[in-house]
Image (spheres, rainbow, N blue to C red):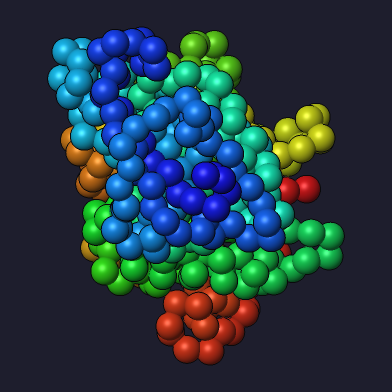
Length: 435
């Protein structure tokens, strides 16, 4: 039976070594008699063929539209109760990743699969979204994940249809986006990528878990997150995040270097506002060894000018040195962002995330996605921090980045269901990773 023509799913009870020749191994094989929905004659070959696994066959009556194709060895679904050691494992979670063939994902996926992010007892399923152009590369990613033998990675599925890939997703990491090309205005980038995230929001609303957590990485990420949540009205707006953790990490690094300490001594670091060069790294509330930064670093001019600009433009400097935008450090920051939501925040500390401003205690305009200080109990949810202080410098900077986000919101009104778009951006500010 040609695997390219049929969807094969094998359930296995496995020994601790997952040996195919063990006498303890018992299995059944399910064959769904439907063509694989592969575009343009692309092929996926399963690692286990009919010659390697002879078993009774029965027809799978599942609706084929509800299940994307699994890849290779991941077409095997193991019985997690078969071995004593799996009794402590948690219920499998589904993680959807867009732009899964890109450089950021190339670093991120292996961290997810290793147990580094969700823990050593948390099995996961990876659902990888790409484009027709990247489909072959996606197959290569799946092959590398196969070859890495991650015991917690129970399934990998790949596809180009967000409605298939986002099915039952518990987490959606939306990385894929078009970079700004030569001569492209920021308004043009907002429209092109906004259409992508509007469609992905609709897909999440239709097929994802009702409590899916969404982290938007593709730029401009704040407004893309707003577009996405507006197109997913059945998912709580609070569940959507724009990634500003890399900016937070960069700010901690610079403060640590200036103070002559290791970066784990820096806490309570907030990035306010937009993931652009108007972002506000907050040194007023940050601490070093539990002491306010301004009492440790007494050079106010450096904090207000050089430090702030270094954080805002760090990505552009990296491009000059490296020849491309950050990928590994972005992947690390995504891991940090997820961990901050699934592990309790250390007492007295907080983290930054671009979140929906409804009901915020800071006087920031409602109905935008704005990076603010958050705390979590480790349940995937968060609350905004109330015990922060402001001065005139911080408030004036916050107002500037707020104005930019409000202008971006008007520029994508046609994608959020709020009328005709009016683009009156206050300036063509750069993203942190642009030249």
